[in-house]
Amino acid sequence: DGGITQSPKYLFRKEGQNVTLSCEQNLNHDAMYWYRQDPGQGLRLIYYSQIVNDFQKGDIAEGYSVSREKKESFPLTVTSAQKNPTAFYLCASRADRDNQPQHFGDGTRLSIL
Amino acid sequence: QKEVEQNSGPLSVPEGAIASLNCTYSDRGSQSFFWYRQYSGKSPELIMFIYSNGDKEDGRFTAQLNKASQYVSLLIRDSQPSDSATYLCAVRGRGSTLGRLYFGRGTQLTVWP
Image 1 (cartoon, rainbow over the protein chains, first blue to last red):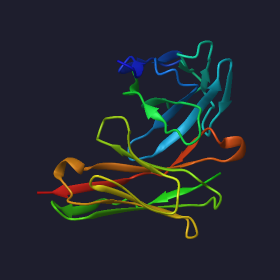
Image 2: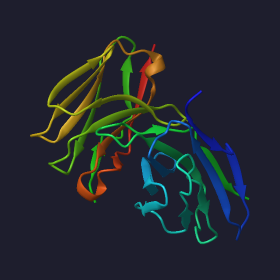
Image 3: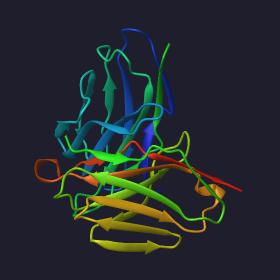
Image 4: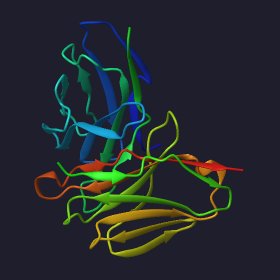
């Protein structure tokens, strides 16, 4: 089935540890996105990429890093510099044609141990 | 920073009623608008998108866009308990931010039997 796969579904981070969230899509979409959602809040953009080997910071990029080495994959690393990482992380992708909507994966819930 | 504002709710309507969800945006030149539904603990799913002034209908859902007044709304006719969710309004960026969406905080809707 075509879709966006995020893994793991739940992740726990120890203090001082970097963790990487996976996002893979087989929709042949050009653009991919990472959002963070806190309880009762909307979606805040962390990073996005519209083409392989290129990405842009969103509104809350500090403490996060990404790579886009393949069209299908856009992993997000939550570094130890991110002091409040507990949140619901959502990956999205879209075809890079006019007015195409973003579609979301099922999300990864990250908590601090 | 482009702003997208939604009534946070919660909005509570009886089964069978019309639910009206509203969204205003700050960038007068915005062209593309999206409504997503998010069930508790789940990822957002696309409900509708609209680009032209006026109404767009899809089953029980109607999106309304008024660019002069900078608002977009979502009407849900014959509301069902299964419509109980948070509804997110999103506006597409322009120019250098064409590839991204700006989200409101969402309106929580409860449909009671």
